[in-house]
Length: 473
Image: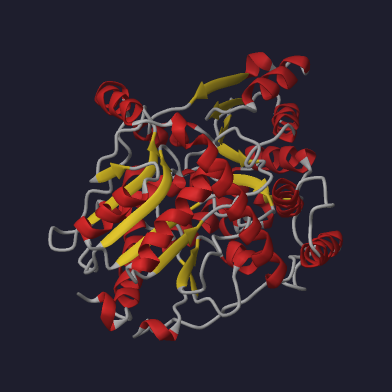
């Protein structure tokens, strides 16, 4: 579902205005509370003695809201964002000498030999009528980066897109026009002057202080040239709050409800899936079923409790085995927990795999699990559903928007419930078919990649045509 603000021009028939804030609204999930507490601690430090009266007041307001498990008031969020940007700028300045043109040149020379190309959508969108500069701090494998690739790769020559990144991973070979620029203002200015973007697409996510400072610098150059900003916010926490003169794009209604800002126009544009690459029919349950888990094994997605969920699945279904696709810092801890439970022989670890292998892996699973601490959307879940594989996961964050069926939604933080629901589905082929049918019906109607790309291009066009006259030259 997409929502567009009227100030950006003609709207689709199903559009509606729904700017909102969670201030005083929904009770926040633990992962969000932890994010805010971590940001407050990093930004203010443990010592409050140097804070002025306003800082102390804002800290108190912030802590009081978190104590009630609510989003802090917008004024407090903006105060924290300002403080974080100032801190990030200081830390980035101290570390800037570590990056050099020599290092970037070496990475550029190595990348053609060791880099992996991202998946390419391969079709040009007729809706593309705007020159766009995409800014993403780190260009590597990931959902935010794939979004940029999908959009930049779908444009005709008349309206080219360009990508600027602070850092490009040595093992990532972008398939679109890009420039790696760690943050020299004069060079960033020349990138804007060379490509003359009508819109800056800020693909924002929280990373290092250097990344935060880089986003600030890129947007400063855009505002100096009066280039309007569209910000995609697809991660836990606050969007970039450097200006209200932007259009926010959230990847799910859940994310929008918790991070939207009153007075700032926004949209929900769900991430798109290339269904033609994944689509396969559901398979009957075999005697020796395989349960899959496909996730980046990092603390913002998967934590220790995922090991307990795998244990419960294997205990509930004695003839099943589990295969894990993905890697990350949590993997050694998960492996150790499964070894301690005596179940290592029933678990296979694939690590990271190229996108081209994902479809066949999803099709090899009979059920997949999503025992995550949070997920602002869940593209992997849609990939599984498209591949004919139903998914069981926690009813947390945006996952219920994808899982659809009570038989597939477990109580958050209950690995036993994951195990029971997977076991029930593996014992009842009719239930398995019913759950997948509900999930596929919703996914196929809402999450195709062409709709996502068209929605973004339409938004870019509407935002660009509302530029001030001074920016049209």
